[in-house]
Length: 215
Image (cartoon, rainbow, N blue to C red; front, top):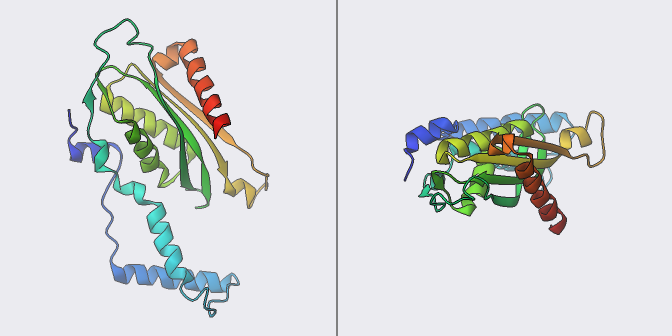
């Protein structure tokens, strides 16, 4: 089964971005003014086009707003009603990601684990990585990314359950503010069978811990 592209893009909040060249040049001028005011010497060979590089890097780092058409394909489940259909997990991770905190526009980075229990459909394993990165490559917060992943998988596949575990370092707490050294923030989201079955949650988190130690 294949999802309707327009409905899918609406569901994940995706839209095609179109920033004209003249507007990009204007943004580069703003950044040159800011960098110069903050102390950067823009007259050296290594910095003369830094504003241009910065704007391009920022645009590339937020490409998740445009979605990913390759996520649309969902395959018929292979469970066939067997006795373990409600408990057999698919777990992918660690899926490494980078994002920009919407509070300070500073990076946070880490890894995610995604688990699901198939019901009506399955998707290719690589699509779980694509899904994480669609939501990570936006201005966001860690909690929202985990919630968006589970909600999208629920809508796409109608699974028996979905789980996410995200662990990340936030530069907004390392470079400024309390200036903690390498703090890690962990968030989980449970839906369906994971929400009601502690054994499934334990199995999922054990797999996450084993995967993290192996990286």
